[in-house]
Length: 421
Image 1 (cartoon, rainbow, N blue to C red):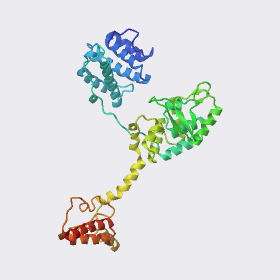
Image 2 (cartoon, one colour):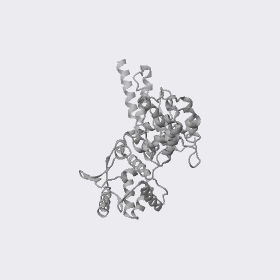
Image 3 (tube, rainbow, N blue to C red):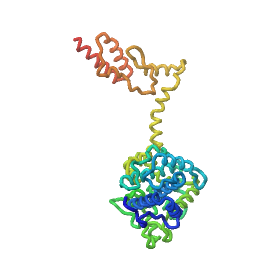
Image 4 (tube, rainbow, N blue to C red):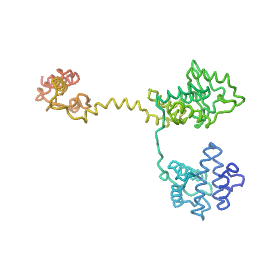
């Protein structure tokens, strides 16, 4: 790595805690700080500012730990497993501003960022890079994978009814979130010309957002009318945005406040805007919408992101479960009591299936994947000595309307007759 010029270092915003910490640490470990800040400067050229901030926090944590626990280390080239193991323990006991310890997801994020840092400076062949990455995937805690929280159908109805009773802006914001599944940032960045007619339908162009892609989502006729009415009476006042209040753009905080006021009026408690995105996806998958279409609607880059909603498709799971529940219940339930009625006795007798050496007592509610399995197998062989048994099985199947079994046994009998004739 070439020598780092003083003006070729990542600079956090002046006056912030990050900048103050970097300046203080540079006096004690100039090489560590120079490498870290040069790395941040490099990734700032291609990553979003929010990603750089996260990497900044991870590197400052690691350098802070090294200065306290390993004061003799003044470069990343000498970092080994002992420093990584110590840093993991230090992170686990690190208190937050509220006094609690860091969450497993935060620790995973910090260690993951640090691992990426080592991988990249090694790939870039920097002088201050170690010979190999000292941090491995097994060092990262297993990430929590909670199911997305969503509103049920009744809660959505109450929310939309409550939104209809408030001012037009709140109603528009809530209905856009419910019917399009937009992220908050995408809603706030909608441009004045976002509504477009394509063919016979109206669509809303969602701007570049979290995943650096834009997309079109269909609009309901009611939403088209509401958007047209809003823009006709509310000029964007030079902002170029579709939705503003008195020329002031929406932001995350204002959207959250709007939604919570409507949710409170609906009596459903606190609702986060992202829950409405999860709700739309869950409703769509429960009503048969294909995963590929849901991915396009939500702007997912891969189906892996969309598959999480398949895990919460409660209606699909319930329908399939109830379809087999009676059969499973029949498997585990106790047999009918000995004193059964004449009708039940006749039903059981009609259902019983004759076997070569006895009877099948499978409950009528249960299907059987092995019915006549052996007789239908290509390796099954029989002889003339079994002719009476096969004929009895054929006749029994015919008497009970089991046509598939009847034809199977008749075919076996025909084969015996041809061989003996």
